[in-house]
Image 1 (tube, rainbow, N blue to C red):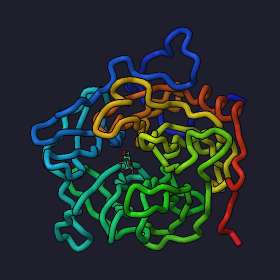
Image 2 (image 1 turned 90 degrees about the horizontal axis):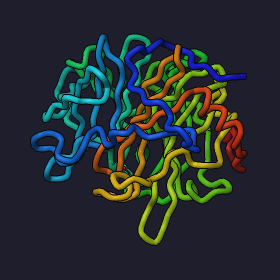
Image 3 (image 1 turned 120 degrees about the horizontal axis):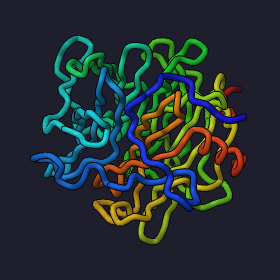
Length: 339
Ligand code: BMA
């Protein structure tokens, strides 16, 4: 069966056809990187960032590192989702009582619309690295909700709809440093306040070495007729440090803690100069997609070498088929936590 995206049509999705003779299921945008060094006054680097359609244009939440190296989140707008007009100032969050909330640092945002609300999930400071959560309806007022999980944790990824009546969030428990371990877990909540039914979803490891140190969620899962399509990052260790690549899996639609297909191969790895060389060499860190239910086109946004933003393309038919054809069952990809 050919996979289809379940969801909205997105007529204006950025797109380039697959280059003739390209062997792999994901191909790069020809004008990468779309956001380069020193993109905005006072900001040295913008990289792991998230975008979404909003009204008749596109909005982005960007990981911006100021000249002094501190990461924060800022908003940007685009007509075509390729050329971005990004604000220099950080997002001004308020808490649920209306008081200003300024995270000490903020990085690796995801941006997910559930029903009529957009949620930003990011890495925040809560006794060290932890998951921050905020909501907005208009990208003018941003209300920060309580931290969903205990420290230490990163790569919080909300699903774009409730499953069995509950919000669902992937996360990757970690340490507060450059975590040398890590698997992807799933948690559920009826109200975005109380989280439970924690399940193990996917392990690092497998036959190949590219994801043998740790893995972490990427863009919001895409609902398809074959299950939840997830892109994620997998990390290997070398004598010159970590290398971050992108992988793909499909999770069960009603029980997303069950892995249906998981490619044993990476689908994008640092090869271009802007991926192999930067503030941190050899990093591909996907945080968002734009996708169209009618055409099946998917545009993937990824941070490149902790320095700039790149885009890559695939189609739902091709990538789900690839995950099926190259499926590998990794030892403990199972619903640990249920008992
Ligand atoms: C991770 C995160 C990412 C970063 C990556 C590579 O731990 O901090 O923001 O892209 O390391 O440096």
